[in-house]
Image (cartoon, rainbow, N blue to C red; front, side, top):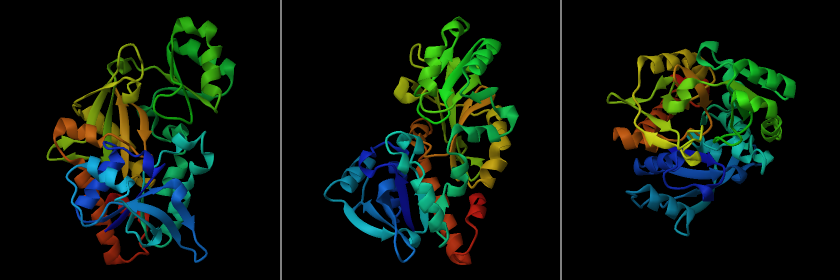
Amino acid sequence: MKIGFIVNDVMTEEKGFTTVRLAHEAHKQGHESYMIGVGDVAYDPDELVRARARSAPKDKKYTSQETYIKDLQGPKGVKQRITIDELDVLMLRNVPSDDYLRRPWAATTAAEFGRVAMRHGVIVVNDPNGLAKANTKMYFQLFPEEVRPRTLITRDRDEIKAFAKEEGRCVLKPMQGSGGASVFLVEKSDIPNLNQMIDAVSRDGFVICQEYLEAAKDGDMRLFVMNGRPLQVKGKYAAFRRTRGGDDMRSNIHAGGKLAAAEITEKDLKIAEIVRPKLVQDGMFLVGLDIVGDKLMEINVFSPGGLGSAQKFTKVNFNKYVIGALERKANYMQYYGRNFDNVDLCTL
């Protein structure tokens, strides 16, 4: 199988990143594994999509992802221009919000070029047509109401203040963003002086005002969903908990959160089942559900990370099974021909 991974920038990838783990696993399994930056793709006059790609030497075995990514990025790595239309699988693993301010042209590049590659039968995951709907956190509002916190999305100060006053305690965050940046917990005592928070969040767009979930004090849980179902191997789920670090309300790891083992309950599985139909409909192959109590805080469809964290607590190499699922899709496509509808492959 020939598989490409599109990331924001190949040279900023690090050991431990889920994309590096997946690319390393594909290489270990004997597949041709390429890493591509969003700025490295091109649409050529012959109407084919090509890219300047990097790969590790094919004849070298890598027992560690650290050595793998070091060689891929370094002088030992193979740099070549490949034809993306000849790949079996193209995995879109870039995070658009990371480019939203600094490189706005890059935010939609992977999905746009991926959509063209689909014309020639390349399996593109997650489906770029589905990702286009998920370009902001507004996508979250398209899922059933029963799994979402009460939410207001606006740029109007008075509406935000009225919502905060009604809730008594709420969360403000940007509609376009990630990683816990510009996220504020608004207490009742903050409402008279809310303008500064609104300024910080609304600087780059719309403001999401969200009901505060009391269970958030215990952190959140990320549960991976693959092909519309919770990713489970030998009775163990690809999941982990993130707890808060000190007084910081955010549980993101780089915001001071700490990792812990996750215990999957019937409530968590019910949430996954409720969102499954839309995830499958939108061609979302690999997704991270961020669960707090009996609600979803976020559905991460762009480069969900943490498979290594899940492996840490379960001792299961989930990367192996993700690559295996992609290989089955590629084999199915080869058997039935490259004119098969890519979206239907989500359930294979």
